[in-house]
Image (cartoon, rainbow, N blue to C red; front, side, top):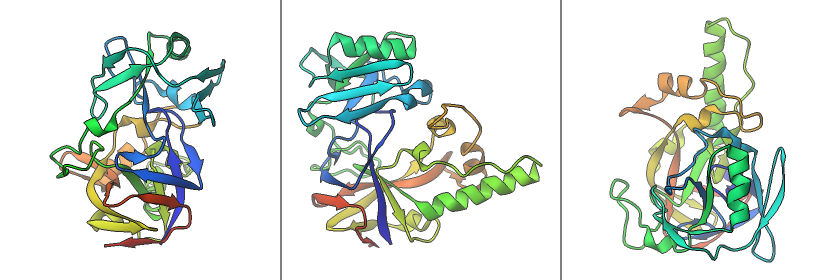
Length: 269
């Protein structure tokens, strides 16, 4: 098995960036989900309700700025956030530093509602919560790295195609893995073998498996077109539903730090 792809998401809910390598930090990959878009009360504006976010690209410049672009909007360079620190009402991001007013205006135009861009300045404030058994030096809410398997996705595609055939519908295109917003995409495992893992080594980094990923409505939006649909939740509910949720992928917590590289060997524990 090998690490086939690495992706980071500079802002929660926007497009991911494919990378050949990324530094593993206690709270996640460097540059992953440290920014978020919130409403005036500090509540998360998320892709499940606002698929327009999937049209946003963000690139980090060598100077530390964030370069934003989206369909129908001009580019905007956002410097490091230095504004007021505000309360933010969602897991693992309880306070954030406001970006400049032009960033708030840019996202307000995109979404058609008041929005603010905030930066998570101190991820060490937020430990892994009790359900995944977080320890005192574990800093991501449920797991610093989100991993999915290409073979599991292929099996899910097969199930979706079988369901379409039974309903006498046209065969659908395979799902884009971007629907699941993973950080690490592996190749070479048996379908859903990751369900049974308790630990895994990727390259030089050891991880414990904190939990399986329960899937939400964000997966039903096409990442390129922002069109909505019933898949993959309809099919996951048929084949992968237990404990009141539908499951795909796993979350990992690092036991040591280092560099992840595409092509790294993946060894379950």
